[in-house]
Structures are given as structure tokens and as C-alpha cells.
Image (cartoon, rainbow, N blue to C red; front, side, top):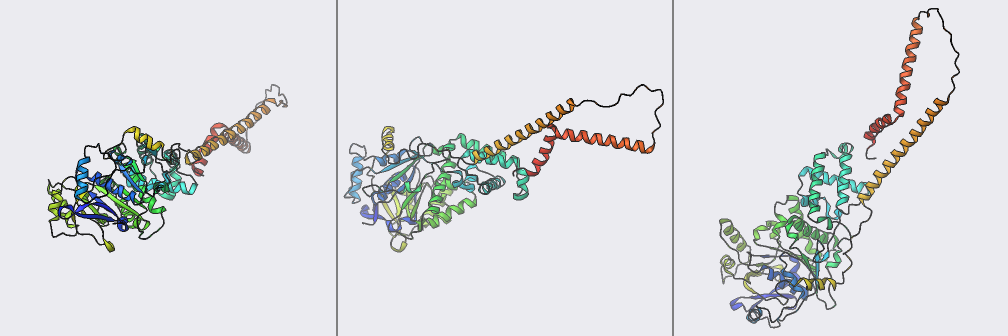
Length: 521
């Protein structure tokens, strides 16, 4: 089949070839099954098939096994004979060993080219999900992003967001009049979550140069699609960061790519391993966003394939959009497992030759129940399929081999060195430094004026008339005289107050009052 990917053999004695039609590959798909049933190998052979057809692939390597795509299988492998027997049984006549073009990526920059994005590109919704914020805290985060736009403060890395939140906290009284209550406790809680995220290594993820999507959608000189492998074995220690990154990448593809309708083959195929992490405890707004992306991104030429243990891990509205399905064995040990098994079987187009539910329970390792979209997007009849053997190496390559692949990549040097442009952190720091310098200069000028006044007063000569001793009694004060004396006392007190206000303490009082009125301007 020239316009398809060979998946394996089905039917009686596994002699009927099962194909994934390239024209419907962007209608998304599902690879499901219990641990140890062969999901990873199925992902590997699909990546090989797409690459061979000139379709770039992005996948996450959760266990480290998929790095073997960069190396050819060998006849010395312990499963060589089993692979050859299986190839003959399913009619895979041109089966052979070959390596595939691979680019390694790593959010931490250790096992591949560094992957970065900016805080602004990630957006408040995904960052709130990443930080597990409450509704009130998420509201403050949205205020911060809004202010960054209005004030022209680029949010590139974590220290930009941290500095902006400090500014929001300092100006919370003035900002609350416009945006609603801003509790300093909520700002502090967000800062603590950011610190935890920073300690987990995410500080390297936020920054520049940001990942360019076109670098994920390349084809080699031989016409094969590039297989982009994200090293996720270490990343899985921070499952929230893993899921948020992959969702961000999907969202970026959705926002940036043009509409192409239904192409002859996808522009990119995206495999989302451990897909349940995306939906565990996810708020409805996030699930709605995933559903929207899954529904509309196919018109951008992108196919999304979810890999998980149980189809029940995927929300029903999203599961209904996954047309190409490979279901490995499910174990029904509990009532919930039996219900999930029954529901999984009911989603397939029945085959009169066998019971689908029983087949899902009984298929062995490397075997699956499959259903691929056919002409006009109609689901194919479910088949028991023996999955074809991989052409690339089964299992991981060595650290030395990985280093050699990275060193030979045409992207080497593009992402390795981080950039630190002038952004919100530097701008807010510059504002604070200028304000402090202006205040210090004003104090210095006022102190100079006071010193000049004291010098002038000390230098004046006394010109009054000396009065001799007198034995006469002082004249009795009339009401008008007493009134003038009172006025003189009030005037003297006023002069003292004015003089005090001219001093350092007075200036601090005035600045405190005016600062409260004009803070943030």
C-alpha cells in the first residue's frame, strides 16, 4: 500500500496486512494496553513508518528505550530469529534493519538539545496548572500577565515573573481598585511554588532561545522525516512539568501552523506517552482546551496519538476523536477493570469472527486488537493483529552513541547557549534604581540648602540696643497686647513645624503620604 504504513498482519493466521492510511493519519489515534504488552514497540514501528513516508515525528521517551531508533537492528540481537519468523508470518517481505534520522531533545539539556520557551508563551492558564494554583492565586497570576502587557514588561524567564509578582505585591492597594483584591498571602504562595519549580530544574526550561517549531518539522536529504525524541526518563520525576510542556507544544502547533485541510499525509505526528498525566486532576478549563486542540489541530495537518494503559484514562469527548486505534491486552482484575474493558470493546466496529472483549483480554505480547480508518474516514472492522517487528534497534543506545548523534546534529550550537535579554526583571530593577537615585539626590539638595541656611544664620551680627538695668515695674498687659503675644507664639510654632518638615524626618513623612497616593506611577 503506497499511501499507508504497514502495522502488522491480521485475520486468519495473521496473513491479512493491516495498514494505517496516511490520508487519515491526522485523524489522531490511540495506543493502549497494560504494562508489558508491547505499547512501546508499537509506538516505535509507527514512528519508523511515518519517517519512511517523509512525515516528521515528535515523541517522548519515558523509559529511554526509544533512543534505539537512531541505530539499526542487528542480526546478533537475541530476538533476531523471532523477528524474522514474525516478518515471514505476516508477509513483511522487505523487512530489514535500518537506522532512522533522530534529533534528541531534553528540557534539562543533558541528554539532548535544550528545549526552552518563555513565560509569556506558556501563558497564565498552563503556568497555573503547572503550579497547582487555587482560583484566587490564578486570578492574581492573570493580573500579573495583564500588567506585563500594559507596562511593556517582557516575561521571558522565571526571574521576570518573580520580579513582576514582587511589584504587584508592593502596589497591591492601588491595583486592587482596578482589578480586585490582591492578597499578599496569595502572592507569597505563588512565589513559593515558583521556587519549588525552580529547584526542580524548570528554570532552564523558561528562557531563550525558545524552541522554533520548524526545527521539529524537518525532513532529511533522503526524504525521510526527522524523528524528534524528548528525553523524559528524568522529566517524569516532575510529571506536572512533563504534561504541561507537551500541552504547550500542542497549543503552539495549533496557534502557529496554517490551515491545510485534509493533506495527503500529515505535516507532523505527535505521540503523547503517559497521556493520563495530562488529565489527572485537571481543571475543566484545561480539559476543554485539550479537547479544542485535538478537535481542530487535524486541520493544521498534525496527528496526535495518545499512549496510555487504559482508554478510560482519556476523557470521553477526546476519546471519540481518536480514529486509529491499537489496543493491546487489558487485564480485568477488578470491577472497574471489567467495566473499562467492556467499554473499550464497545468502541470498535464488530468483527463476526471473534468476540472483541474476549480478544482484548487474550491477545499476547506484541499482538493487539486494531481498527484503522478507511475510505471516507469510516472505522475499519476490528482485527486481531500481530504487530510487525521493528527495523531499528530494540532497546536504548549507549551514552556514547547518543553523544555522537547530538554532536553530529545540524542543530548543534543553536540552542545550547542561553540568552538573557533585557526583560521585566531588568526593567523593574532599573525603575527601582532610578527612583532610589532621584530620592537620594533630592535629599542631598535639601540638606545642602539647610546647611546654607544654618551657615547664614550663624554668620549674622547682632545689631540690637543694649538695655540697662531698670527698677521700674513692667507695664500691665492689656487684652490687645496679650492677643499679639499669642499670635507671636502661634507664628513661632508654625515656623518650627515648617522647619521640621524641611528636615529629613519631614521629608520622609511627605514622601510616605505622596508615595501612597502615587505608588506605581
